[in-house]
Image (cartoon, rainbow, N blue to C red):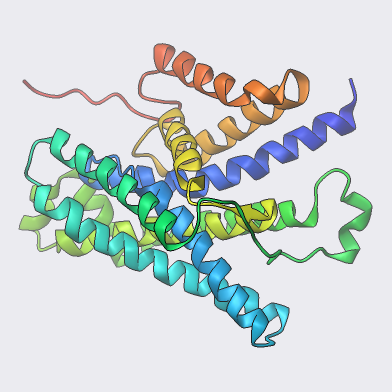
Length: 302
């Protein structure tokens, strides 16, 4: 076995999985709180990437240096995406909170299609070049044939986001309120938890992680278009289901498993059918572990 090639595929799978995990967090956090699949979440990822592209282009024309462009463009993408996530929750989901679940699901699909076409009309249907916001580090050149410095930055950034989010959920006041709301929303309300604030915060945090993923992968791939959110969003949803929808560690594990699955299948079999194999793997997991890898089966009283 070519161990160097194996290591290259393994690290490449971590890179893919890191992006899927960042976006899957939004799915799993929202589902954990209000049991809704936010199918518009992939479009938040796409909007974050487009925002970074527009801001980076303007700053480059204005003569800003690379560091300032990266910081300002990334920050603007996160803030703009958070604003979209907050607005979507208020307009599309909050009025349907007590409605049948099918109504909220249809609203989510409709919002996804609306955002896709909104960006299509505002921008273009063509792929647009995306600037390299992640620099190539000279000290990493000897190892670039195994994993590029851009991929390394993606993995490190994802790890930092995961650690910060874990601390936020476990030790902060809003994190405790999120856990209480996820466990029993009505009881949390009786104990004085502002459930509306918790739900809005959940959408905002999930949108922020999606925007970070959008900026990272767009910079790595070098191009974007209005449809990238749908494809990546579906795969991130698969990652969330694989790990156990509603579980934050499960979203991370599911993203990594999906990334490794795609990477090794593309490397050893064929890259033409990596998406097919990923979804077959999902079916296999759901047949033998319906609640996901880290998910727990919940019994409901009838």
